[in-house]
Length: 269
Image 1 (cartoon, rainbow, N blue to C red):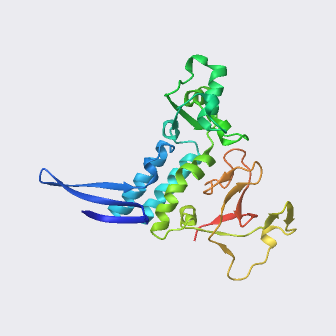
Image 2 (image 1 turned 90 degrees about the vertical axis):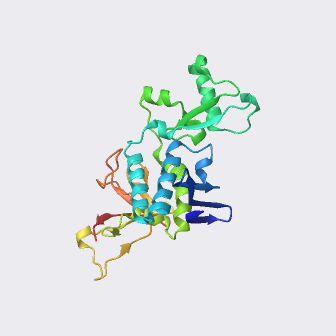
């Protein structure tokens, strides 16, 4: 018997099942086709997904679920997530030369063969890795967690937000009528005070200072956007840093909307 039930797609659902055990009523979340059972997700994905489902199915509280996801994204951006929760594990099922294409765990094994032959996983072993920041393809940026800690390498937070946290969470929220943009809104709206638009490599900059710009009585509000981008180093954020500046280079933050970049300031409503 289910106390609450959430249908995501025809073959994907989650619900709170009620069972009687030794005369006592017990509840547990039952899932089918939900991403938490996939082996290519990191531990953080499972934690976030399970917590969101708990908020929705047990407590019926959408706002708490949204706030929780926002906090996780903020912690990722600020480097506060334990590296153990970011580890992805894949099996080395055959010899390296038998693999076609470039896969993260295979590229890591190749690197380990050069620098630490005694630590190289064998066929049948499971390979643990995290994705670090850098300009190369994602598969080339897979690294041994111990090596990352030893060398102080930076985790690719963009990868984890876009490819580990958001995909399963978005589908859950869509099932209860919540759009992706609600995750990043923080209950606030963003107003355009100074325009700096970029498109097709052409830049249009207003010659007027922000205080000289004229607006109608109903100031333009932005309630839907793609993400935030650092004007200086290009780092992408999915929630606006609280300082209003890039964590890496202290550059100004722009928001990206339909191919345009616009400078923003944030106002509480």
